Length: 346
Image (cartoon, rainbow, N blue to C red):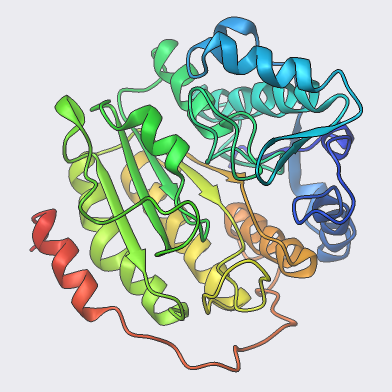
């Protein structure tokens, strides 16, 4: 076991707007929980570094980069209805992107076994030409493109388990047969994309799998989505690495959504994805943080992910001090049947 890589830099806290859901407080709460959880001394630290212009242009347009850069020179403003930029935000986003690229490449080169990118600002809503949904640069898309450009992999599976559909990541790879994009998300909900009929475009047809869940689905429904929809399709795709856009905003206590996952359910979900990577791609998996707006839930969710990645039980049982949802859980039978037929899953 080579160890689990961990990407974090205090610079990620510089992108901050107090009172905004996506503030530095999200990461400030994580660190003490990881210290108390006893995982930090088991991790291989991966330094953040600024992505190059060439790496950024592999996903984003020059005009998009220039817009964010210019906005970051001032005192702060909104570049989208809910997406802020403050002085230095561009540098922070470029640092997170470069670190994510290096984290993935460290896994693919065999320097580490797997990894977790505790980064911000998040990325999966950022399209090639637009910042939106709190996201400036698409960290996962940039890392995937870099891995393919360096011919470190043939095929990449991106699994997005944030409560919101990753419209930016889907847009970037919708016509790319070498990247399979999977998303399970609340629907209809921001950003309004991610219907099950969206399955890819052109030569990428069939490489997008969306599971648009109604509000109220919890641990049981999410587990079924992974086992009955993603797992068989992932097996058929045969990826070389699994990149996970992980958000903790499907938790029942998150203020920006209405799903019903518990921390125990999230922990099982993350462990299941680690197991999937072990079976399909020699354990190569990298989690990259997206959303999650209850700071305590986010912190414990990250801790549980790192426990799953460490993989030997030394770090102890899953942490779930919040407990079960007070609401009942909705079923997903009809939706799963439709999706399995569409993607030819027996």
